[in-house]
Length: 484
Image (cartoon, rainbow, N blue to C red):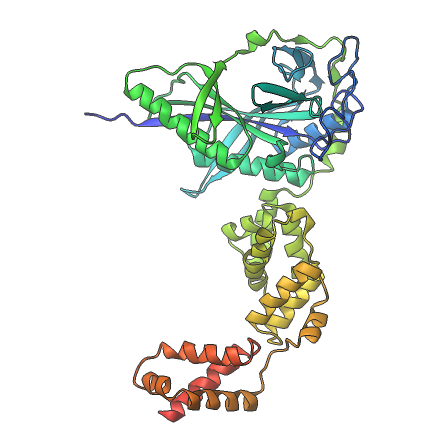
């Protein structure tokens, strides 16, 4: 039996709430993510009461232009808002004010790296358009409750072309979009709060074919884990259907996290189903070139440019710099430490991506709120690299500065953590340990060399981790050799 090999065809829609002070078309606060009572950030406009008039948020337009520029898009001179008509409980007006034919930005691209093959791929971006977010549904028993705090929050939808052919590719693309949005300061990237959501459009076709088969859309994926698991499941589901002589239906799907499977929500709508027509209460926006140039001057150094510079300036590999530049604040912290410290750059990198990152992860610290100053961390590394303190002590101090951010030298003084490097003291200590353990000494001299590390551990235990391991190693080798 011949098994047909299939190729996934994947496009991604990314919905990113913009970090504006107020909502898209009214003066209500856009900060719905804080712990507020439901339905407290509302007014007649964002709850869709009759006669309420929307007023456009200029900052949201500026932020969307900034994103468009970062994604290599054309910024369109004419932006037109339209009414996207559909009826759903979380849509108070019965339509959504959105953009379609005349978005803020279009025809862009983003290069991604295929982690498996180590090759670059260009993903085309069809458009980035502005719209208002919907309300939030909460289900309790047999009831559905609606919180309108989120309704009307500025939402930027970034729509890719179906250029991706693996789950790894869409994960790389989604990660990069998130990083860019955070670099620009227009989205927090906090998916647990629903401010960044994904919708995957998936179809499969025989490998080598150029036709586009029926697709499905998986809605409201709010984590990278959900995105990859749902996409993997749907790809395999469609392949199984074709292999069994069945068809794929054009439909909108949900993702059941518990069951680990997609499920049908409704038939997939096409553009004509939404009956788009221009929003009569918002005139067309004319985007002046000088305005675009002013916004363009606000673009920071983005991840790709920072990766290239870090490789050239610091002699790090692409894989190493990408672990530093994924978050702007982490990259900035690294550079600040490099300028303050006399330690080797590679050592700074190893500590930052090793013990430092472990402390951040264990304490669930937001990378934008690192409780350690670059000055204090640079001092810690310099004391370690100059052998004033050893590895064990440096890690102990790192834990303390994450808790209190006290000055490193003050911690050393308070806890008596200076490294013991005195050769006379260490020689006497080693001789005492060897004399108290004659059997291990005989076994070592008889060829059981693994016991050397045991002797090293005994010295470290006696000095409570304060001994200089390099000096101890040299003295121990010398003394054992003389006992032979």
